[in-house]
Length: 281
Image (tube, rainbow, N blue to C red; front, top):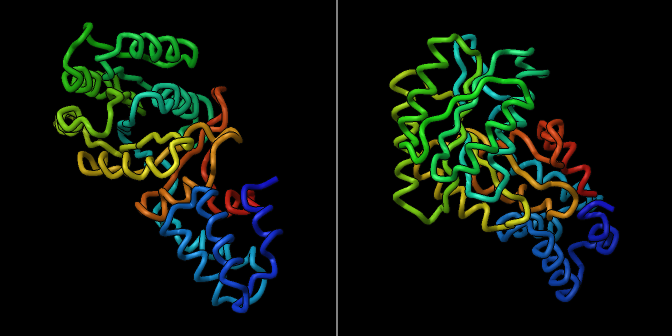
């Protein structure tokens, strides 16, 4: 059953004449669905003032809040450089591997050459994990010495990607808490040094769908450090509250480009707003 199907079934007769108690129950159900206060308020306004099918009214509101910006990865004719950022535990490193698989084997990249750079030097396990994934996906891999400066590793990776004429360069940055200002400044430094070699085409933020409204707080902190161009939402495997990702895009107006629906390499799906909203019902 979709996230909102029970809600619509329960309140399908909601009109302007609904009681205050019914409206309050409806609002609570929306908040429980993790739509967040802003989106909940807009849906409530549509429920009170609108006419016609309640599901259609809710769908219209949800889709109206989505970003109009492109959802495709900005792959260019030259080297395409992508920074992947996010908090530890969101599935960031695995997502980098899934992107590499996508570019390497199918989709818009048509099997282009991919280089993965492990700039998450604070965690040896993260470097080892990405190296293992690179071997499995059959793409090239770049790393620095243990505890090397992340910006230096990213710079060297960018130079290698240019010199060896790779098509795609994916940089896994150090996972960090959004409250650690010194590490956020370092993230901005990584971007600056890479752009001394080649433009950064995308900065993708990985968010965990199970964190709910906290994802918005995380995203705003990352946006203060680097210009986020797209969002990838992980752990959308049925256990997460899907309403949260609609709230994230409505609040930030940054397009969700992919959703992760499982642990497999093929479980990174392009995000289609209309299909997703329809699935909620």
